[in-house]
Image (cartoon, rainbow, N blue to C red; front, top):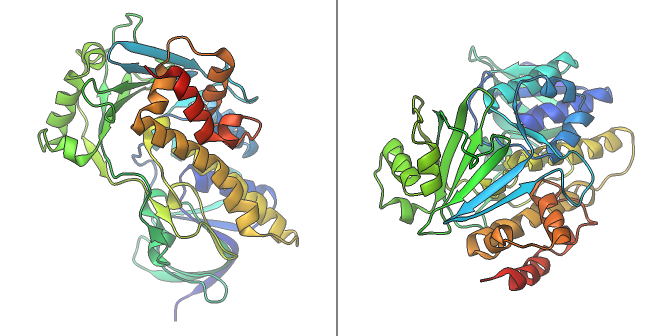
Length: 410
């Protein structure tokens, strides 16, 4: 007979959404236990935050710690395609709220948030793994610790913040194919040795597009310690023309994009090269009255606009708001109170991800003489404010994108 413990909420995963959710619940004296399979710090991609994240970080009482974390300031995004260049300053956006954020090495950033959650009284169990869950009555999780000892926790509710591990979608058979085409990302961290010649702004993420294939794009994310995260995203059929070795493939692809070739000419490549294949994901449901999926555990779109952490944190905010009402004795409806509000922003991002790969949104972003009001609305999306329903690019994204594209197309 396994030892059984009880709590109000179990959170699976101590990444950004898990740590933020735990802190928000602890503020309301709701008992919460976080189960984390890894030992922090650990590597993760998704290193360029969006300003909208800062609003949730502030709500979780973690803003001071993040601001003291010595991370690289980020105030916007730059885009380059075959001689065409555009910049978006996130302080010049349609939506009120933070206009700057940070570029972060996720090992350090995630540990900082997890440490802050613990400092606020959250119980966080590293190197514990969820093996099974039974939701027939109250959620009952079977867990194994780092010594191999198994135990159970009975909870009133479970939040899955496990990211790409997607624990509950696997255990509860919730996974569904993504509506987005499968793509592969190859990436590493470099000692960049970039010479400031006015082309590259360390306060912005640089998104570059392959000169011969507009569906292939690169990220360059600078950190405060003189290193950068660099990666490329493409379909496997495109990457089949390149070496199978990730290092050789990425370096060859970098040399095919003139701007990246020039600014990374002195770069050193001391680190391992990683890849993720078929990262986009979807699920049959985001929630019911016993669990909710946060961030990447529910749906992951694409890294092109760095929306992953923002969606994760917004999902943590919405889910904890709903749980706080539930534990206060109020009637809640998880679809109306959590899933539908979350999908407002997810669906807005989806429109622009689809528009990026079809080319329409690239033309809008790179248009040399944009209408300033339209640019401010688009800038709000790029800054992560995809839940601002005062912005017509949120409430009616497909029609608005099509209309603007007709004005911007070559």
